[in-house]
Length: 71
Image (tube, one colour):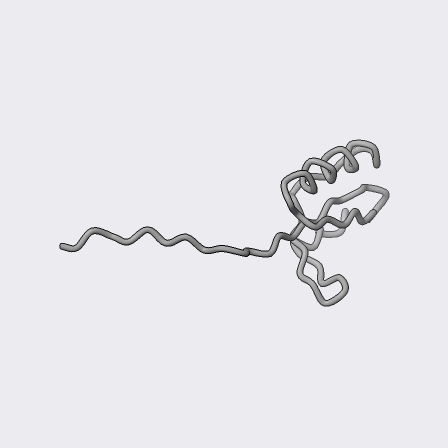
């Protein structure tokens, strides 16, 4: 029975979320990691049970709130 994959990890005091994919090769994980980084995510690749996993995080820098119309 395979161990459950952690949905998040704390790395260097930062919370990273698993992207939900199990990659067959490190090359496929690296390709996904590069795509995340191109979209301003911080990433970490971790191998568990011989499967590379990608964990990501992105700090929210701006919050835009649309005001609801008055009733």
